[in-house]
Length: 193
Length: 193
DNA sequence: GAGTGGTGAGACAGGTCTGTCTCATACATA
DNA sequence: TATGTATGAGACAGACCTGTCTCACCACTC
Image (tube, rainbow over all chains, first blue to last red; front, side, top):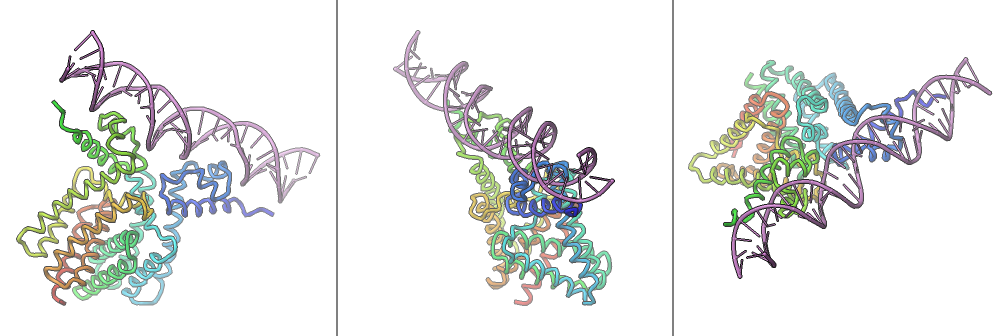
């Protein structure tokens, strides 16, 4: 019986690394800590990931993919666009309340890898642009493309700002204010179209 | 002749560390790099700062103080509150366009020091709360206190989000959208009062 | 000339980091 | 039994980290 090709251990390392990176940051989390927590040999890790940086990119892409799938399902639901946007804010409210919420891993990655040429930086840009693009698609159901682009960027800012504030203080107030502002902007943009 | 008490060297270390932390992050910037760039002896640095963490706090507090002074001057100007808020966004637009803009140092510090009990975390919370409080004061000139608190939080989110987006992509579009949204929210809150 | 006090230069300790390497083990298949 | 593959365990190299310590230097004073 094959213990499932290879991907078992590989995926386990990715998920363990995710938890550790989220809690302590990227530079502060050593390879030794990751393999100890994942309970794999160091060589097992390095056989799957040529370097720590590539592991970080893998972790980010993995999380981005999970969120993307949620957004894909949302896009196909038969509800009005306002409600779809509201749903995204609801998800964030839930996330902020979760047991070990430590802010946005992508924002943290940007803080530690500020070089635009670095693969980690590029992975962050991919994720944020992806979220913005999906929000824009939703908004295009109710306003022209140019307007939708601008509103999507504003909503993304509110989300990012709320995530940062939620990490520092009362998360409930943060997401409530952000949601209210977002809904106001969306409503105003629909009317003025 | 005393070469000016001691504080000359001390301040020089703080400013050098600021530039390096901003570019490469906190964990990735070593003490050796700081003293080499500042051209001081290692003992000179450790005589002024008992540890790297305390140097980081000092750097953050120094930047917070500079921004606070700007806000103090703004508060005393005889212009309408909307214009004061607009001025804060103008400052950010300038900042985003500056030569070595690398995002918000405080947000980056939060990413690397996520423990709420850590002195660096506390320094970040101080700065962000300070900015929010000052914006609330401005807004209280034109709306009730409770409303002002909520609007100030929303403006802070827009600013933080715009700063993050500006680090990733076109900074001009980011601050323009944020400013437009902020002014809309302020205007709506004044009317509905 | 002898002493004093502040400073720089850099060795050093003890730890941690990433990444490589060897060897043993377990298991499936031929 | 023989072989191939994925893994585990851990030593190891070489670099880097923070923080301490010694020593040389230099200006000034007595």
